[in-house]
Length: 133
Image 1 (spheres, rainbow, N blue to C red):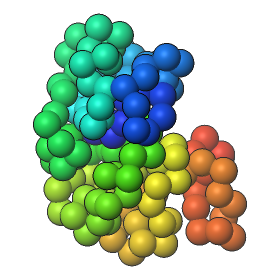
Image 2: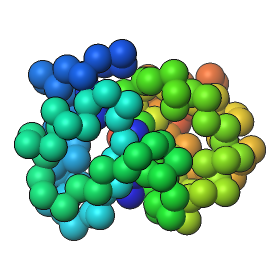
Image 3: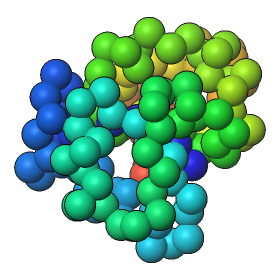
């Protein structure tokens, strides 16, 4: 499983109240093997996240071979990753975009089961956690 973004917000190394903390902890606690990347916050995240998280040198290294991708922080660097390059690198096809970084239609056209937050079905996005989407 790949997690992109560990910091509270982009362009900082601030980990205070970062949603990655409970998300990654829960994933690891449930048995997931997590490969993570953040452009600025990995050293700050290490003592705050469970042992066993693999910290990668870039976003593509984190997604390579992953069954699932979870986008936690909206770094521009992640926006620049094309759906086709993500699809080619990943083993699976599930993307959970907690920051609406990607275009839902482009992700579906690339073959992903794409889930985002706060987008209605008419906007082309599935809302994670909403039954039947």
